[in-house]
Length: 355
Length: 270
Image 1 (cartoon, helix red, strand yellow):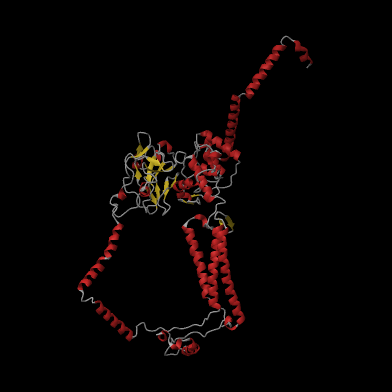
Image 2: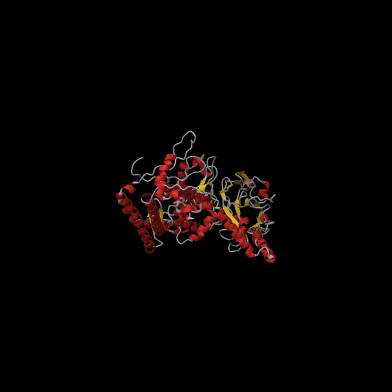
C-alpha cells in the first residue's frame, strides 16, 4: 500500500529530474495559456554549500537550547530563593512581586529559546527542498470496497439481527428512549419566574436599613446632597437568598429640597424631600448610582442612560425605556424611614410580559 | 523728682501707695486669671475670623458674594463648614478662574495652611457646618482595609472605579482619580460632597468607615502599592488589558510568524 501513497515518481531520488520536467512544462503557449509553471528551481542556502556557516548555525541552535536549560535552572532557583512577599521596581512595569517577575521571565525565556532554536534549526540546517505532492482520488479502489461490503454482510448475517426479532425490537426501544434523559434536563431551564420579577423584598412597614452601618435610617440622617444605600429590614448579608433579593431590592436614598421636586407623584411618595429610588437601571439592569448632587442626575455607567431624580427619575438620555421605579416611603412610629409598600412597577430591565 | 521724694512723708502717701498696690494686684489678676485666657482665645479666634474675612473679600467675594451669600457665579457658603473650605482651597480648586467650565479641577494651592484656616474660620462663622477633621479621624493607622474595600465598592466605586482611578460622568464632568490625594482631603470630600459628588455625612458613613476607606485606598493606590503582575495599564480592568493583548500580544505573534516563514538567506542572490 505504501507504494500507492507516495507515487514512485515523487520519491526524493527522482526529485531533481522532476524539477527539470516541470520547467519544461512551464512554457505557456496559445493553446494552453495557464500552463502549470511548476516549482521554481531550488536554490541552496549558505549553510548548504558552506560548512563553516552550517557549523555556525549549529552553534547558534545549541546556544539557544543551552539558554533554555539555564533559564529552567533559573526558574527553579527563583522559586526556591525568592520570598513571595518581596517587591521590586522594574522600570516600565512599576512595583511588582519579585517572585512573579522572576518566574515569568525565566519560564518565558526557557520556552521561547526552545521554540527559537527549533525554528532556527529547521530554517538553516534541515532540508528545505520543496516537494510537490500530487492529489490522488479520494475513492477507495474497487477491491477494497467490495471487501468492506462483503465483511458487512457477513457480520449482519452472523449477528442474526433479522432473525432474532425480540433483540432487535428491544434494542430499538432502548435507543429511542435514551435521548429522553437529555430532554428531561432541559427542564432546568425553567420554571418560569411567574410574578417574581414583579415583586421585591420591600413591603409595607419594612424599615430602610443603611447598607454601611446596618442601622435603620432617621430622616435627620439624610442630608441634602448626600447619598445613602439601603436594604429592606430583615435582609442580612449572610442570608442564602441575599444576592437574589438585593439584586431587586437595592435602593438609593437622596434628599432634595421639596421645592426642587418637579413631579407631583414623586413629591407625594417622598418624605420631607427624601426620595428612595431603585438602584437597578431599567435598560439592562446595571447597578446605577453615579449621582450628581448638583444636577440631581443619575448616570448608568454601562450605556450612559441618565435619569433626573428631581423629575420622577425621567429618562433624559440614553437607551433606558422606563423611569427608575420609586419606593413610597414614610416614617414609622419610632421615627425611622419605612416603606409604604413594594415598588409599584417591576424593577430593572423590561421583559416580554412586562406590559 | 525732688518734689516727689520730699512728699513721701505726706499723710496721704500711704493712701496713694495702697491705691497703687490695689491697682497692680487687680491688674495682675485680670492678666493671669483663667477667665481671661478664654477671652484671649476668643480674641485670637475673632482675629482669625477678621483676617479670614479680609482674605475672603479679596479672593472669594467676587463670585460667592459679600458675607458668603452667593451670587449667580458661585453658590452660597453659609453652612458649608470649615471642612469644605479646607478641601476646596487646600486642593487648589478654589479660587476658580471661571464658573463657566463643566467642573473645577485640582490645581496648585496658592494659600498657606494658616490662611486657609483663617478663611475656614470665617466661613464657619457664617453658619454651622462640618468642622475640619482631626488627624485621629482621618489617619488610616489601624483601620480595617478589607472593610474599607467593601465600603468603597458599595459607595464610591461606581464613579471613582474600584481602585480609585476615577471615571467619566455626564457633560464633561468626571470623578477624579484618588491617587496621591491626602487622607485629610479624602475625608473632607466624603464629609462635604464637593461639586457634584454626593456627601457621605457621619450618619451615612461613620468616621470609622471613612478611615477604613482611606486605608483601603492607601493599600490599593498608594505610591508603594505592589501590583503582583506588574504593568497595571491604568488599572481600568478588561478594556485596557484586552486592547493591550490584541495589539501587542497578537502583534508579537504575527511578528514571530513572519520571522518563521521568512525566506532564508540564500547562497547566491537571485
